[in-house]
Image (cartoon, rainbow, N blue to C red; front, side, top):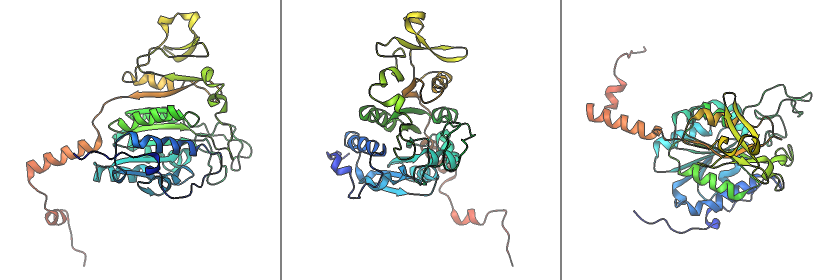
Length: 336
């Protein structure tokens, strides 16, 4: 196999003017991806970014790779077709919470349950940005927007819980204020064989500014972000004084001194997905301590591999297919 040529961020950056609002969190996500790509040893010509519609969906324009700005909500379906037809390609899917969880919700959950080999980045800013500030499927109850002037009545989706419920084999969360954390989570997601979903808390500084500020501001992170690390106790706080335990009622935040270190849950991203689901429900709102990192990473046969094996078995048993015979097989009829 020919060695992959060395590249830099510049090689992965297209010549298109980046047209997001100044200060948008999408800039930092784009930079994190462009800096990561030279490190994962893939060729630009073997890499594809597919998006739907929305602010996040401009992403393929800014990557010097193949890409497609597709139809609203349909990027997981289009990416599924590409991944099945060309398993040699490195397929990424990028979209926002409105694009992927509203009109695209059905396509997303089926790509996840099938375990198609896709790296899916879901930018969650809890608002519709491109269409100027309507509430989205992740907006909190009571959210006042142009489309909900008296406050939203809808209970929001939790993207991590949704992905776990859809049987995604890799589920993680990161945020746009920590490039190093983003890159590590994206690297892990890309290395996973199967459907990998990463929720990215992303600030829309025009229509929902500061949505995650209580969590992601530098002086808040130690107290508010719960870093999930495989094989390590789930502890956080300025002095690591708080921790998470798992009870019959789910995940619970405690003071380590009150329960003892041996009671603190040790994170196992390969284990019981019920525990991962409990961790995904830990934060009751966006001003509560919130887990970041990999919630679950399990091995299951990837859909493309399974389909190829099935096709090979059929060909071995029955020989090459005959398209003409298929088209004229029963039941058929003549229309006169």
